[in-house]
Image (cartoon, protein in one colour):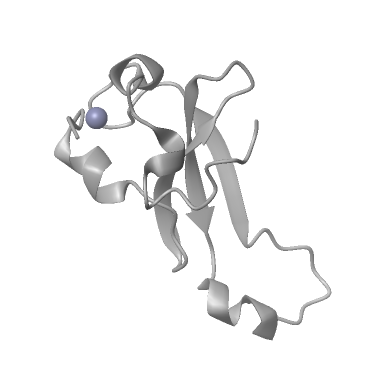
Length: 95
Ligand SMILES: [Zn+2]
């Protein structure tokens, strides 16, 4: 894999612990897309929360460029097979 930068590589992959990760998905047009994923609470402990307030435990936001080096991601990773990458558990997610 020819990563655009080491920081992107470090943060790439679906995350289950609280923190921030970059995930890939197939866009509606068949090209590769990327999202930043924010997880507020470790997945295995999310069921323990019991609050009347609405809380976003996980949030994603689409990105077009690498947040660290600025390359246009769909161009840089256009040869990357999304479904075959082991760390993209949500590769089929659309949008
Ligand atoms: Zn980069």
